[in-house]
Length: 139
Picture (cartoon, rainbow, N blue to C red):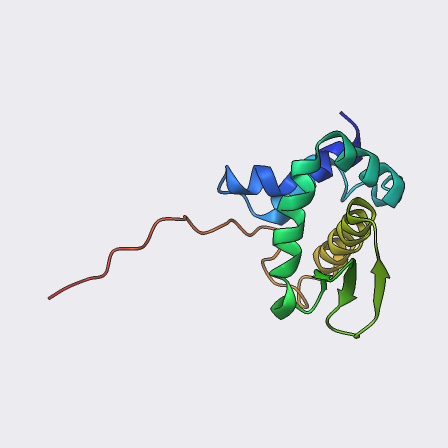
C-alpha cells in the first residue's frame, strides 16, 4: 500500500479506533517522509476508493475552529482554505480538491507536531477520548 493510500484511509481508521489523527498519521510513515506525498498520488488513491473522499470532505468541513486547513463545497466548486491566513484555492474537481485539502491539512498537522514541545505540549502523544459519555457523579 502506498503512502497516499495509507493517508487516504485515515478518516476511516479514525472512526474505528481510539487513536488520534496524529497517531494514525505517524503510523502511515508520513511524519518521517512528508516529501514523498503528492497531490497527484492522493488524488489517484481517492479515485480507487471514492468513498474515502466523502469522509475527508466531512472532516474538512469540521476544521473551521482548528485554525488550519478546511474544505467547503460552494456550488460547482470546492474552496480549500487556510482559516488562519485566509488564503484559499478554488477547485472544481471533487477528488482533486479533496487531495489538495488532504496534503495541506496533514502538512499543517506535521508542522504542529514538529514544533518544539513548549509550543505544542502533549500533541504528539495525544490519544483520543473515548466516544462514550463519562458517568456523572451523583450525590
